[in-house]
Image 1 (cartoon, rainbow, N blue to C red):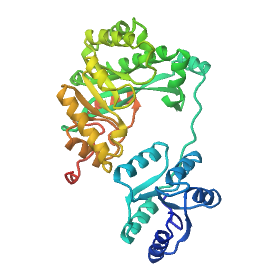
Image 2: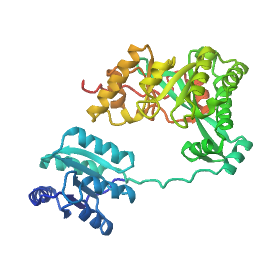
Image 3: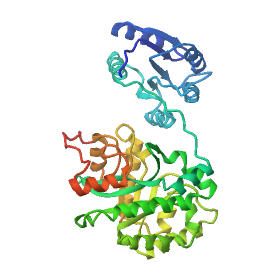
Length: 406
């Protein structure tokens, strides 16, 4: 639920700036205001006091704002934070990306000077937020637990629909791994690393693909144009029988190879990449499509695009999540779309969370996207049933007014 903003901490090394802040806040309402001259003083205050909101300068002597952010990450701080600085916009945006990546509640980033109107707007924004909580990291499953779930048939495929932004209809799905034990659904963050480290990633992947293909095959014939993407860790591609196994499993479910896209994930690249490259070429010769996942991060790079016959480029969510306010993310997204067009690749954006983002990436030339704005991942059988009942408009949102041209 929303909360009233009562206590505010101002962190700035210049006393005149702090005084201006305090004066402006006092004109806006009754607040318990504390101040700190650097990141260390601020952290000591935060450890002993509960603040509803923090305004923090980045560039300070002794211990700067980045020091404070590091300490707040360590204690999983949840109150909204406004970053401000006289530094350039790129530095502010990079600091926000860092803090948000580690789940700090960064409300906004603003350049100096901050006006009374800006303060009023920021406080209103903070007070309208729902209570922000950070979930404690969940323990990874052990090898024995994974083996149990594999034996029990608990490894399932969830489908996240991908949408054609021009038609506002489903164009395909990404199959994602889940472990379903009764009412308990275990997310990949609890078992993928463990599976890769214990050698169980191959049977786990096969279990997901088997379930995904069985459900995908149940789509009505009128939806034969839909595509299914499956994730392949580089580590399992050392098994030279895998391409043929995927083909035989697709054939057993009457699925055309050309309807399947194999996404190369950046995790667990084998020590000998040539083995992986040969496996990908075999998949391509079998008429499966290839996708380079998480483009712009880790292994996904221009070298791989040059070396391998990819059909699809997936733009990582880190370039999408803040695209509305981060000019650097916009520029990188635009370049990725341009590169995909130049190489005749399909570009797919991940992590679309709201209507404004959907509109902007469409304006920038992206035609296929997935994300919580459309649909969260759902059990494969549930998605297939919905498509068969409702058609390709399943999950599509009502169109509202377009955002301003960027």
